[in-house]
Length: 481
Length: 132
Image (tube, rainbow over all chains, first blue to last red; front, side, top):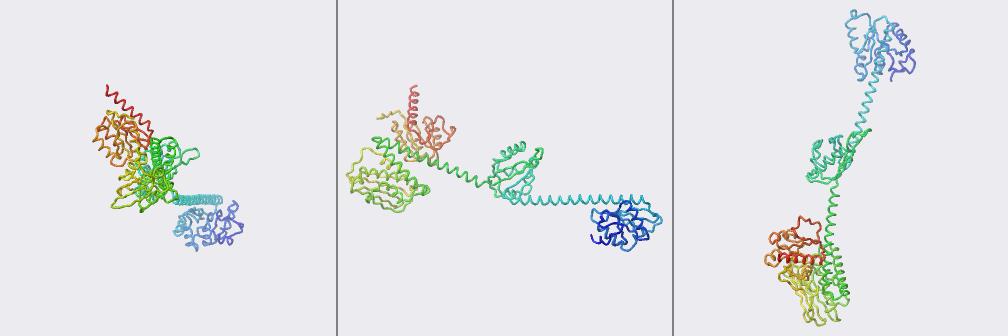
C-alpha cells in the first residue's frame, strides 16, 4: 500500500486498517479536526485527505468510506477522483457522505452536478449533528464490509471454478491418453460421455451414440444379450461385464470386453456408471485358432488310431501264433511311429522321396550294402509317404524272412523316376533263395496291391519271379500329392 | 467256412481311406457277406445303381467329392428305402436328426464284433419279416 506511511496521522496510530477507516476530506477551517474528533470518540478510525489527489490514492487502496465537504468536491483533482471511482473493481463501490451547505434550493447547478457524479452518496447538512454523522458513517462502513464479503465469496467461486476446470482438464487428459475406450452414463443408463478412443475406434459422429443408441454399433447377434445384461446391472447395481462384437470404423466387427461399475453416494444410491471397452479381437481369434488346431490334432490322432486298429486286425487275422502276432504287430506300429516323426518334421505337409525310402529301410539295414537305391528328388504327400513306408516295411520284412535278405548274397534294387507324367517305383530282389508264389496272400502283399495302388491312384504289379520278388508301382503325377 | 446264403444281401462299403476300406471289406467278408466297395459317394452310387443284390450300406462320413457320407445315406434311403444303413465316423457329435431313420452309428475306431453282431441281427430280422 503506497503512501500509507505518509498518510499516517496523529488521530490514527500506525497500522491503521485503511479498509475500515474513513477518509476525511474537509480542508476548510476546523471542519476536519471536528469531524475526526467526533468519529474517534465513537471508535471509528479516520485518515485525513487534504486534497482530492490524496483521496484518490486512498480510494485506490479501498478505504472504508469517505466523509467530504461540498466545497471540497470542487477543488483540484476532481478529474482524477472521477477516474479512480469508475476504475474501481466490480465488487467495490466506496460510499460517500457529503456534508452539504444548505438545501438543494440554495445550491448552484455546478455544485449539484458535482454531487450527482457520486453514484453512492448521502447528504448530511451542517452544522454537524453528531448522531446523524455517526449513524451515517457506521451504515457506510457496514455496507463496505458486506462488499468485502461478497468479494471473498466471488473469489472463492472463481477459485473453485479454476479447480474444476483443471480437474476436468486432467480427467480429459487421462481419459483420452489411455488405450481404452471409456464411457459413462447417468444412473438410468443414459450414455452421456465417451472418450476419444471410442470415437476413433467406431468412427461414429460425436454424440451419435448418446442415450441408448450405443446398442446399434453392436453386432446384431450380440445386441439383445448386451441389452439384457446392461438392464440387469442397472436394476441391481451389479458389475457389468460382457464380451461382444463392436463395429470398427473399417466396417468389420471386432471382439471387445465391456466392463462397467457404478459409483455410489454415501447412502448407496448409484450416482453414475463408468465403463470401458478393451479390444480383445486378437486374443479371441488366437483362442479360436487354438481350438481349431486342437480339433485338427484330435482328428489326426483318431485317424492314426484307426490305422493302428487296421494293423491289429490284419495282423491277428493272419498270425499263426501269438508270439508271431506280437512281433509283427509291434514292428508295424514302430514303423508307423517313425513315419509320423518324419511327417511332423515336415509339418505334416510333404516328404521327399529319397528321405522316405532311406528312413523306411533304416531298421532293416545290416551295414552290408544289400540295398541299392536310385532315384531323383520327388515330393509325395503325407498319406502317400506313409503308404510307401508301410509297403517297404512289409517288403523288407518279407525279404529278410524268405527273400533276398534271408541269405548272404541277395540284393534289393530300389529305383524310381518320372517320365511322361508317370511316376514309376520298383523293388527287385535278386540272389535270394528260389521263390515260390505264396499260397496265402499275407497282409503285406494285399496292402501293396490294394491300398498302396489306391493311395497313388495308380496300379501295382507284384510278381514272384523265380529270381526273386518284383514289385512295380505306376502312378500319375497327380496321385503323388 | 462261411456258407454264403444266396438270399443274404450284399454289403456296399464306402470309405475313402484305402487301408481302412480294405480292413472293413475283410471284416464283413469274414462275417459271411458278399461285399462291394467304393472310395467315394459318387462311385458308391454307380455301384448301387448297377447291382440289385446290395441290401446294406456301410459308409464313412468324411469323404471327398460331391457328397459326404450323411448325404449319401439320405440319397440311398430315398432311392432304395429297403437298404439298411450303418454309418461309421471319427467325427463325434453327429446328431440323430442328421441320420436317416433306423440307421446305426459307430464311432471310429470301431469294434468289429459290434458291427458283425448288428449285421447278423439285421439279417435275422429280415428273414423273420419275409416269413410273415
